[in-house]
Length: 298
Length: 270
Image (cartoon, rainbow over all chains, first blue to last red; front, side, top):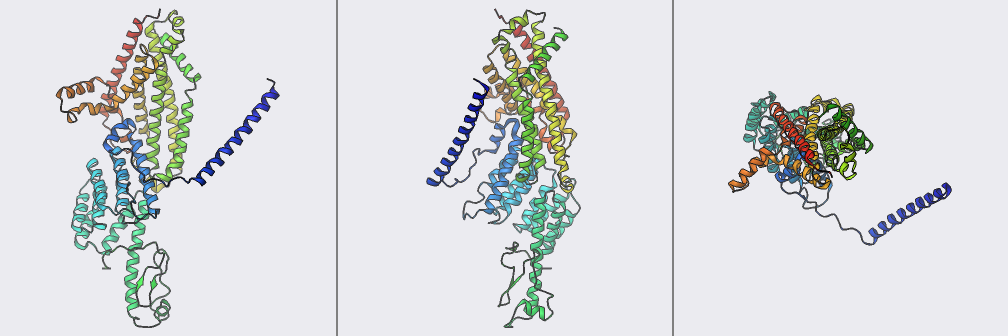
């Protein structure tokens, strides 16, 4: 075969290849139009037993833990955006359980997973009981990590409103090696004023200062903004009460009377809503809604 | 057995592995790490460092395992298949030197591969360190460029030395396919040995439990020197136990290489 013939043959092969590729893609698109693929089935775990999976993975258990952690993060993110009315977050706990069994020292999976699990529906599955299970498992694997005790107390404080139990956990955490001194104060404050807004604020503020992950910082900042909004609403309702009964009740009326310097906005910049009946609420579209039902301003 | 003969055979094995494009595994390793680092930051929720360390060490382990099994099991049988064994044995080279040289050559190949992978691994860690904010670094249990990471790399090397010895041992009397299966079997069993020790908790039969316990002591315990988890999490490593584990594996390697030479010395190639 001469070089010219070989070149011509290669060109024809390349053209045929390109044409066939275009045909294959076109056929695939046509097939999808004519017979749309079925909606994605409910995702499932192929391997159900974390301890059996740990054995099967042999020396790759840590890597498998990372894979399950990433699946948990993706699952949580996907379910948060989902509009489904049921079956959401079904795999969250099994995935986190798998990740923390495959790598028993994967504390971030346990601690952050507990935050995911505790979050109320629809932002999360609203399962503080599972969050506690995950944290207890982490504590059993790393009995000297005060952070687990702190997080258990935190779930009991914020999500279960069991203040004596939360205070006991903070107290125990304070006695563990390397624990910060504010934990002891937190234990006292929780026991004395558990449920009030100021103690909740202290808790989130400490979490914000000690958070090792950006996601945790954002969660703490969000909660602090919610608490600030609760304070704002208390103050605004007191102001509005002075003008109740006025037919022209509005923010402009209050501003005109010198009670406010301008239309009040929440910590994210969304104006608060004042109804004709004198009710003050978060503005429509505020990302801070729904606000937690935590205490009143001390 | 002569050291110079062993060296010559070892160098020949190393050169052949380079000709067989074994170093391509390094390219694969680098690609896996780079691809992972770009994808991870989106999916790990701040756990990039842990995931990349885990991935890097696991990839080193997997690539090393593949090299040791695929090349190790063919080291002797390939020479027999090609009939080049006749010309080799007609030279002034003892059979023992041939086997030991083959083993050392493959260990050298693995060591060079592992060393280069470690350099690529540290380069990736350096990149991660440069591109990460300082406040995030404060939350890291162990730094990105943790010198202690060399410990699991070295211990993966020890595990691979044992796997290579097993592969060479089986290749002296079995076909490449069977040798691969046997070697893989020993590697798997080496990671299950903890379960063998506590088999009485899973079965009611005292005889089966005693047999499993016996196997636990006979089989090499590869998981005993696996410190990847401790190093990645910045935890204390029980060095004394690891040292004893390494010494134990060194004894197994000695047994296997000696066994290989014994079998090969008795093999009749006529």
